[in-house]
Every structure is written in C-alpha cells, then in structure tokens.
Amino acid sequence: MNCTEFLSKINRLLPICSAHNYDFISVFRVLFMIAGVGVDIVSVERMAKISQRLEMRFLTRIFTPEEIAVCHGRKGRAAFEAFAGRFAVKEAFKKALTAAGRDLHLDWKDVSVQNEPNGLPVLRFSPRIQSRVGDLRWHVSLSHEHQFAVAVVICEEISRE
Image (cartoon, rainbow, N blue to C red; front, side, top):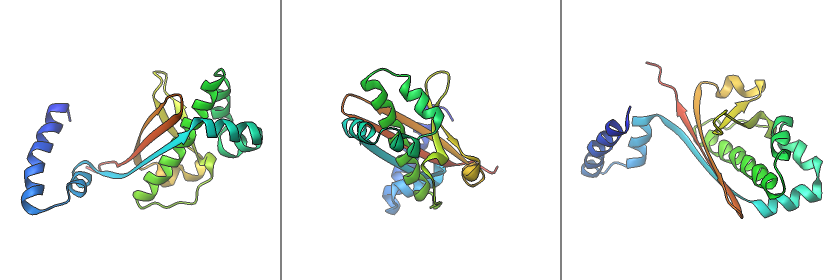
C-alpha cells in the first residue's frame, strides 16, 4: 500500500468510526494488523552510571556479545547512547510482545538489536524464542540525543492470505 492508498483508507475510516462510536485505535489495529506497540525511554546518564558501577557484569547480563562489541566500538558518550538505545528497544519489544498477547518469559539476550547495512535497527531472536515470535513482523524505531534514548517497537501480524 502506498501513501495515497493509506491516507484514503484513513479518510474513509474516520467518519465510520465517528458515526458508529467505534474506538478508532481498535479499528485501526484490525485494518492494519497491528498486534502490539511498545515504547520505552532510557536516561543515557543512568545507563552510563550503571555500566561504570557494575562494569561487564551488567553488560553481559543484558546484551549479546555482538551488541557489546558494536557499542564499545563507539567513542565516549556515544557508547552509552548506543547501550541506552538498545536497552530501550529491548524494553519496548517486551511491551509490544505483551500487548500482542504473547507474554513470554524472556532472557534479556533472547532479543538483540542489530543494524542493517543502511543503519536501520532490526531485531534478532535467539533460537529459544524464534519459533514463538517468528510469525510476526517487527518494526523498530530508535533515537537518542544527549540525555535520552527512546525506542518504539511495533508488532504486526503477517497476513495469511
């Protein structure tokens, strides 16, 4: 669906929701197969303090070796921004998964945040949970600035058509 088709659907949907007193979000979820959304924000300063105080014990409990290598490859504060961003994504993932009705017991390292060659963040799953979340499409948005890192994870059901 292109942008024009999307806006056309929204324009047709709004009057129907209003006329019938429907909850727009519920209708939107059905129409676009959004199963769950998670959002999280993390203080970069707090991540830096925890990382410095607990050193590798904290990092190795939360992050995969690949994630640690990527973050440590950045200089100074950028490393803490990268860790905070990945932590926010993991938290947002758990929220989206729960909203999708799949409240799984997860280890922090069951989900990792990698980057596509173009820099976009993507989720990678451990073999332990891949079969339980692999039937869903995952969308990730991650941003950070000096004080905070924020992440949004959207869980989409894949059409069975």
